[in-house]
Image (tube, rainbow, N blue to C red; front, side):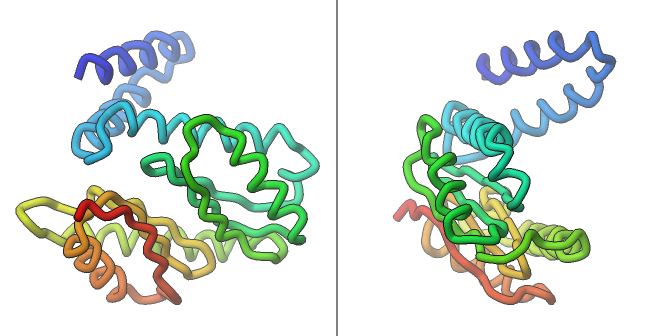
Length: 195
């Protein structure tokens, strides 16, 4: 809890100068709450946030790569999911190479497809599907826990990726809920199991 308070205080102080304090307080509180609920623990939670930030930044710095691809990076417990599009296998592999250079990355699931970067409408549709899946799995309760809060949901081209640190029963319940959402083309389970 002390770590969360320290991070929130640092964010507020560093951004108050720019007039963003109310936004930062709300965002930090949400992140802090999620960290406390997660089975990963606050340290691992913040490591994952750092992995996502560092890898996105590293890809952006490689302008010749970044200008040709569309990429989303998600980290959970040091396991990184890469989704998006690259026009060639070489760019896909180069992007993975950049991401793998980040500290504390244990494993990479490179699910980038070989294609031109997706259009805004396709990404918007994916965002709607993600929102619907998240809403659906928030209703999943097993063992008196809301496992929807422990699940990361990412959609790319209608394919829904589910990540979390769950029991097999929890993962099955979350997956079954996600299957009930219209527009889902396929579900890819990337869970780490607690049992």
